[in-house]
Image (cartoon, rainbow, N blue to C red; front, side, top):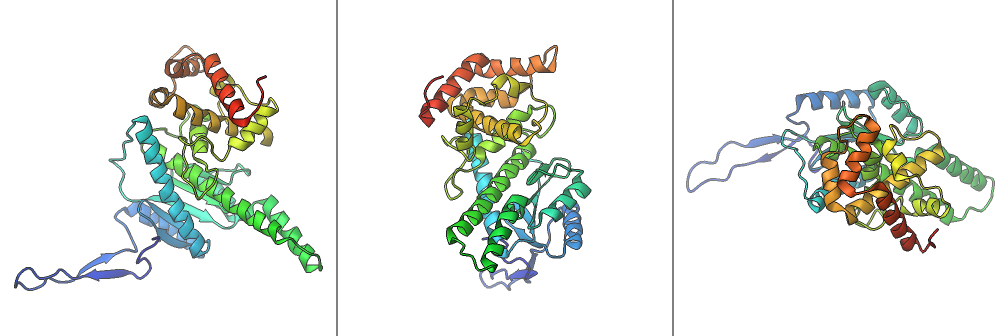
Length: 345
């Protein structure tokens, strides 16, 4: 249960008598704060700047949100499920993260308004990419996102339907349900994706730094995005939330090569190229986790081998873990074509 006994300030636990000795004094446990003074100060500052936000707490996360309480509770449960999925992923590969130095909960900030999200991103973290729906800030140690219902395209569609209805037109309830389902699923995907970034970074398994290849950082997080939110998710599943789009790209012959993904220094510009990069990276990472788990564990331990050039180093590290890139490319795409029912090229 999210925010159990929060906001009430405190509850009192009375120590029971032992034999015939007198009971001790009540022990007061305050739940409106934590032991991390820096985190508490940061939370107070955010709540002071955004008075509509409420503070929610789960086992591993502090969630500041201006979404309805029921929605915030769902997000809290989704964050905890993400943490369990990351634990499963680590067990599957036989790797251990170093979370020993971590005290307290991770900070998550959720906005209902995209405008307020973008304002916070620019002011607090110098993040100005307007296509983002969420991000993890390694220096700040927090993740931030906005609900997809305030995505411009979703908002425009909702407005058009509302105007049509107010003008006396008929609106199919299925259209409204589809928009709501899309927004909820898109938001859940962002929560999970950024939560994976945060957890893997803090455990030292895959840090969000320029030392690690962008395709791996984004591909691992993308491989956790769910096909269906109500089901279990993670790269060990044969399909994720990006599989369908990837297979459309595969059918059209527009899948980026593994070599080009390894060499990429940043996510490509342009909506189509960016989407293809994310879809391919997520699908490849999931395939490698399922089919080459020992190689993936080795690769995560050393994703960039030393070499004369960074590009050569990235190719060397990949092939040391998985074998020749050309062989992995062929096996991966053949498997995906077979799963999608596509003919061989």
